[in-house]
Image (cartoon, rainbow over the protein chains, first blue to last red):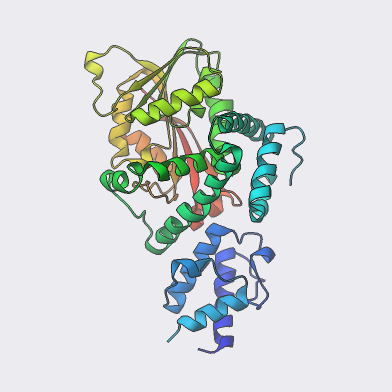
Amino acid sequence: MTCDEIRAKLTDILRDVFDEDALVADDSLSSDDVAEWDSTNHVRLMVTIEGEFGIRFETDEITAPENVGELIGLIQSKLP
Amino acid sequence: MPELAAYPSLDRMITQLLTLWPEHREYVEKSFSTRARDVMATSEEIASCVLRLADGMAGGLDGLCGDYRFLCEKIVLPEELHFRRHNRYRLSSFEDALKECYANAPFMTRYMNGLLVSNVIWHNHAAAISSYVQEYLPSLKAGSDHLEIGPGHGLFLYFAAMCHSVAGVSGWDVSPTSIAHTREALSALGVERPTTLTLQNLFEADPASDDRRFDSIVMSEILEHLEDPVAALRFAMAWLKPGGTIWVNVPANSPAPDHIFLVESPEHACDIVRAAGLDVTAWHGFAMTGTTLEKARRRKLAISCVVIGRKP
């Protein structure tokens, strides 16, 4: 899966998890930019990503990404 | 941050917490930005209690704040992850909770200290206590005998002891350590009126051989720790006078290492109270910080469910 394909899928997930239709998975997007991106919703986001991409994060990876760019990199590293 | 000049205890506590954990500012701001005036008033009272309790603790307020951070980052987060992945709590038996948590004294101390602070910081915890202080206690008739099952940190008994219409204040707990802890807390909070704290297992107490009966019973954050909450409420109801009330506070969708019974909504909490044979006279759902009740229901987020049941 290419980086752009991951980004497109991640955009849909972000919009669904945070109920914000205008969200776009830009590399710089972070929890600072989304009002509802708190610790609980972050876990919801990561578990939704696990389900949608068929991957599994280690516990310490859940809180590691600082922004969407790092998140895409983490997803890419988990894909076969 | 909302203006806290009128709330000196909150101001001191939050200033200290954010000095030690500046990254928590956004959450705290969110939690306090939507609090109604009555919830702010209760929050100030709780913060005042926490500060007085902190004075008697080895680590003081810094230690409490550290334990609160430990609760958020090291205890709740892994449980939240399990809950989201599997749609259930990690443990389901009291025996497992006993082995993993209750028997681990150092862990329990940090866990309980963290929860004490959460009563100020987490919106749903503060709102539930506020409904107890501002709505439930004033509704009790003069001369009420009041019992709390599992009084823990002692805050609910403290507020009952401060209520003029409450004549008798009692607490039951299965743990001698907890009884001692509650006694110390009430003393530190300056409760001077007699308070009867008894080592008593609710499931073993025999109402047939004991003529004590209560006008009011509180079970706050107890049912989620039990395998059969309906049975627990039935046992508790046997100690109520006819027309007496039980004030239940139980969290829905709130994973924690010792939560074994999953309540899914305020309606589910009401069903549990009704199944025990009580009439539900009022209920509230207080959503976790930063969300609405509607969103919390849809996303299965934590909701503090307050239910008042009346014995027919």
